[in-house]
Image (cartoon, rainbow, N blue to C red; front, side, top):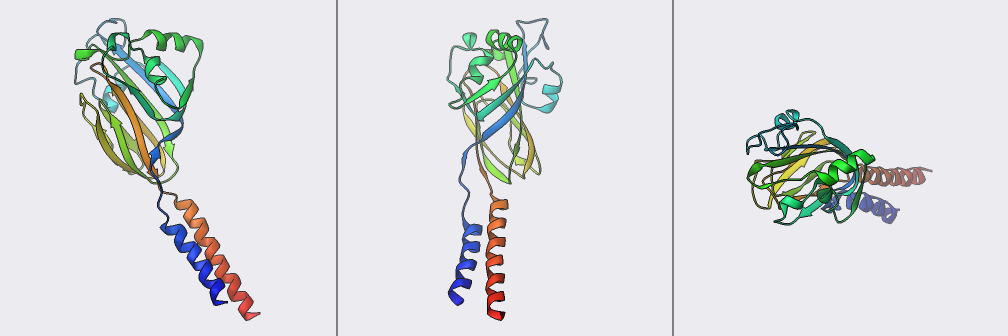
Length: 223
Protein backbone atom coordinates (compact mmCIF):
# COMPACT_ATOMS: atom_id res chain seq x y z
CA UNK A 1 0.00 0.00 0.00
CA UNK A 2 2.80 2.36 0.82
CA UNK A 3 4.39 1.93 -2.61
CA UNK A 4 1.10 2.66 -4.38
CA UNK A 5 0.51 5.77 -2.28
CA UNK A 6 4.03 7.06 -2.93
CA UNK A 7 3.70 6.55 -6.70
CA UNK A 8 0.47 8.54 -6.88
CA UNK A 9 2.07 11.39 -4.93
CA UNK A 10 5.20 11.32 -7.12
CA UNK A 11 3.16 11.63 -10.33
CA UNK A 12 1.36 14.70 -9.01
CA UNK A 13 4.57 16.40 -7.81
CA UNK A 14 6.40 15.65 -11.07
CA UNK A 15 3.57 17.19 -13.07
CA UNK A 16 3.75 20.37 -11.03
CA UNK A 17 7.55 20.55 -11.36
CA UNK A 18 7.76 19.92 -15.13
CA UNK A 19 8.94 23.13 -16.84
CA UNK A 20 7.17 24.53 -19.92
CA UNK A 21 9.33 24.97 -23.01
CA UNK A 22 9.72 28.21 -24.94
CA UNK A 23 8.72 28.12 -28.59
CA UNK A 24 7.70 30.47 -31.37
CA UNK A 25 4.11 31.55 -30.79
CA UNK A 26 1.77 29.59 -33.06
CA UNK A 27 -1.96 29.86 -33.63
CA UNK A 28 -4.64 31.62 -35.62
CA UNK A 29 -4.58 35.41 -35.49
CA UNK A 30 -6.54 38.28 -36.94
CA UNK A 31 -4.22 40.91 -38.45
CA UNK A 32 -5.51 44.42 -39.08
CA UNK A 33 -3.31 46.38 -41.49
CA UNK A 34 -2.90 50.16 -41.68
CA UNK A 35 -0.64 51.75 -44.30
CA UNK A 36 0.15 55.43 -44.75
CA UNK A 37 2.65 57.19 -47.00
CA UNK A 38 3.84 60.60 -48.12
CA UNK A 39 3.57 59.19 -51.65
CA UNK A 40 -0.17 58.61 -51.26
CA UNK A 41 -1.89 61.94 -50.51
CA UNK A 42 -5.27 60.23 -50.70
CA UNK A 43 -4.36 57.70 -48.04
CA UNK A 44 -4.71 57.77 -44.29
CA UNK A 45 -2.01 60.39 -43.85
CA UNK A 46 -0.02 62.65 -46.18
CA UNK A 47 2.72 63.32 -43.61
CA UNK A 48 4.71 60.47 -42.10
CA UNK A 49 7.06 61.18 -39.20
CA UNK A 50 8.99 59.16 -36.64
CA UNK A 51 6.46 60.28 -34.03
CA UNK A 52 3.32 59.07 -35.78
CA UNK A 53 5.11 55.89 -36.93
CA UNK A 54 5.58 54.70 -33.35
CA UNK A 55 3.68 51.52 -32.48
CA UNK A 56 1.05 52.96 -30.14
CA UNK A 57 -2.73 52.46 -29.93
CA UNK A 58 -3.18 56.22 -30.42
CA UNK A 59 -1.23 56.22 -33.68
CA UNK A 60 -3.10 53.17 -34.98
CA UNK A 61 -6.45 54.77 -34.11
CA UNK A 62 -5.49 57.83 -36.16
CA UNK A 63 -5.17 55.74 -39.33
CA UNK A 64 -7.74 54.12 -41.60
CA UNK A 65 -8.02 50.33 -41.63
CA UNK A 66 -6.88 49.14 -45.06
CA UNK A 67 -7.13 45.36 -44.81
CA UNK A 68 -7.83 42.48 -42.45
CA UNK A 69 -6.40 38.99 -42.90
CA UNK A 70 -6.69 35.76 -40.95
CA UNK A 71 -3.25 34.27 -40.40
CA UNK A 72 -2.52 30.74 -39.19
CA UNK A 73 1.02 29.76 -38.30
CA UNK A 74 4.01 31.00 -36.35
CA UNK A 75 4.74 34.65 -35.55
CA UNK A 76 8.17 34.76 -37.17
CA UNK A 77 8.24 37.26 -40.01
CA UNK A 78 11.64 38.36 -41.28
CA UNK A 79 12.79 40.49 -44.22
CA UNK A 80 16.45 41.52 -44.40
CA UNK A 81 17.85 44.99 -44.94
CA UNK A 82 17.70 46.87 -48.23
CA UNK A 83 15.25 46.84 -51.16
CA UNK A 84 12.55 48.67 -49.23
CA UNK A 85 11.39 50.34 -52.45
CA UNK A 86 10.42 46.93 -53.83
CA UNK A 87 9.11 45.23 -50.68
CA UNK A 88 5.34 44.98 -50.43
CA UNK A 89 3.00 44.14 -47.57
CA UNK A 90 2.37 40.67 -48.99
CA UNK A 91 6.14 40.01 -48.95
CA UNK A 92 6.16 40.53 -45.20
CA UNK A 93 3.13 38.30 -44.60
CA UNK A 94 4.66 35.56 -46.74
CA UNK A 95 8.09 35.75 -45.10
CA UNK A 96 7.06 33.52 -42.18
CA UNK A 97 8.80 30.15 -42.14
CA UNK A 98 5.47 28.45 -41.41
CA UNK A 99 2.12 30.08 -41.99
CA UNK A 100 -0.58 31.17 -44.41
CA UNK A 101 -3.27 33.81 -44.56
CA UNK A 102 -6.76 34.02 -46.04
CA UNK A 103 -8.31 37.10 -47.67
CA UNK A 104 -10.54 38.12 -50.55
CA UNK A 105 -9.21 38.92 -54.04
CA UNK A 106 -9.52 42.68 -53.64
CA UNK A 107 -7.41 42.61 -50.49
CA UNK A 108 -4.71 40.57 -52.22
CA UNK A 109 -4.35 43.27 -54.87
CA UNK A 110 -3.82 45.87 -52.15
CA UNK A 111 -1.23 43.73 -50.33
CA UNK A 112 0.67 42.95 -53.54
CA UNK A 113 0.85 46.57 -54.68
CA UNK A 114 1.38 48.58 -51.48
CA UNK A 115 4.92 49.23 -50.25
CA UNK A 116 5.60 47.93 -46.75
CA UNK A 117 8.02 50.57 -45.49
CA UNK A 118 10.40 53.19 -46.84
CA UNK A 119 13.39 54.95 -45.32
CA UNK A 120 13.24 58.37 -43.63
CA UNK A 121 9.64 57.51 -42.62
CA UNK A 122 8.17 58.00 -46.10
CA UNK A 123 5.93 54.92 -45.73
CA UNK A 124 4.83 53.04 -42.60
CA UNK A 125 2.62 49.98 -42.09
CA UNK A 126 1.04 49.05 -38.76
CA UNK A 127 0.18 45.39 -38.14
CA UNK A 128 -2.30 44.81 -35.33
CA UNK A 129 -2.22 41.13 -34.29
CA UNK A 130 -5.20 39.90 -32.27
CA UNK A 131 -5.00 36.49 -30.59
CA UNK A 132 -4.97 34.82 -27.19
CA UNK A 133 -2.61 33.13 -24.74
CA UNK A 134 -3.92 29.74 -23.58
CA UNK A 135 -2.11 30.14 -20.26
CA UNK A 136 0.09 32.54 -18.36
CA UNK A 137 2.92 33.47 -20.72
CA UNK A 138 6.41 34.89 -20.54
CA UNK A 139 8.63 35.51 -23.51
CA UNK A 140 10.53 37.77 -25.87
CA UNK A 141 9.47 39.79 -28.89
CA UNK A 142 12.21 40.18 -31.50
CA UNK A 143 11.63 43.21 -33.72
CA UNK A 144 13.33 45.97 -35.68
CA UNK A 145 10.80 48.74 -35.10
CA UNK A 146 8.39 49.49 -32.29
CA UNK A 147 5.99 47.03 -30.68
CA UNK A 148 3.16 47.48 -28.18
CA UNK A 149 1.58 44.54 -26.37
CA UNK A 150 -1.79 44.83 -24.62
CA UNK A 151 -2.83 41.70 -22.70
CA UNK A 152 -4.34 40.53 -19.41
CA UNK A 153 -2.09 41.77 -16.58
CA UNK A 154 0.80 42.22 -19.02
CA UNK A 155 4.14 43.77 -18.18
CA UNK A 156 6.85 44.82 -20.63
CA UNK A 157 6.18 44.24 -24.31
CA UNK A 158 6.41 47.94 -25.24
CA UNK A 159 9.27 49.50 -27.20
CA UNK A 160 9.88 52.80 -28.94
CA UNK A 161 11.11 52.54 -32.55
CA UNK A 162 14.64 51.15 -32.85
CA UNK A 163 16.37 50.96 -36.22
CA UNK A 164 18.07 47.60 -35.71
CA UNK A 165 16.96 44.20 -34.43
CA UNK A 166 16.36 44.06 -30.67
CA UNK A 167 14.51 42.02 -28.05
CA UNK A 168 11.67 43.14 -25.78
CA UNK A 169 10.60 40.90 -22.88
CA UNK A 170 7.02 40.50 -21.67
CA UNK A 171 4.77 38.57 -19.30
CA UNK A 172 0.99 38.16 -19.51
CA UNK A 173 -1.85 36.15 -18.03
CA UNK A 174 -4.06 33.82 -20.03
CA UNK A 175 -6.55 35.60 -22.28
CA UNK A 176 -6.84 37.80 -25.34
CA UNK A 177 -4.00 40.03 -26.47
CA UNK A 178 -3.33 42.72 -29.08
CA UNK A 179 0.16 43.31 -30.46
CA UNK A 180 0.97 46.33 -32.60
CA UNK A 181 4.06 46.12 -34.79
CA UNK A 182 5.30 49.08 -36.83
CA UNK A 183 7.15 48.46 -40.08
CA UNK A 184 8.77 51.89 -40.48
CA UNK A 185 11.87 53.59 -41.85
CA UNK A 186 12.65 50.89 -44.41
CA UNK A 187 13.92 47.34 -44.05
CA UNK A 188 14.83 45.19 -42.18
CA UNK A 189 11.30 44.27 -41.13
CA UNK A 190 11.35 41.67 -38.36
CA UNK A 191 8.77 40.33 -35.93
CA UNK A 192 9.07 37.11 -33.93
CA UNK A 193 7.42 36.11 -30.65
CA UNK A 194 9.00 33.37 -28.56
CA UNK A 195 6.85 32.49 -25.58
CA UNK A 196 6.60 30.00 -22.75
CA UNK A 197 2.96 29.30 -21.92
CA UNK A 198 2.69 27.82 -18.44
CA UNK A 199 0.57 24.62 -18.61
CA UNK A 200 -1.29 25.20 -15.37
CA UNK A 201 -4.51 23.41 -16.41
CA UNK A 202 -2.63 20.21 -17.31
CA UNK A 203 -0.69 20.26 -14.05
CA UNK A 204 -3.86 20.77 -12.09
CA UNK A 205 -5.51 17.79 -13.78
CA UNK A 206 -2.57 15.53 -13.02
CA UNK A 207 -2.53 16.74 -9.44
CA UNK A 208 -6.19 15.85 -9.10
CA UNK A 209 -5.47 12.44 -10.61
CA UNK A 210 -2.76 11.90 -8.02
CA UNK A 211 -5.06 12.93 -5.20
CA UNK A 212 -7.72 10.65 -6.61
CA UNK A 213 -5.24 7.78 -6.47
CA UNK A 214 -4.52 8.54 -2.83
CA UNK A 215 -8.24 8.54 -2.06
CA UNK A 216 -8.66 5.18 -3.77
CA UNK A 217 -5.80 3.75 -1.73
CA UNK A 218 -7.44 5.03 1.45
CA UNK A 219 -10.74 3.40 0.54
CA UNK A 220 -9.07 0.05 -0.09
CA UNK A 221 -7.29 0.21 3.23
CA UNK A 222 -10.54 0.82 5.12
CA UNK A 223 -12.48 -1.84 3.18
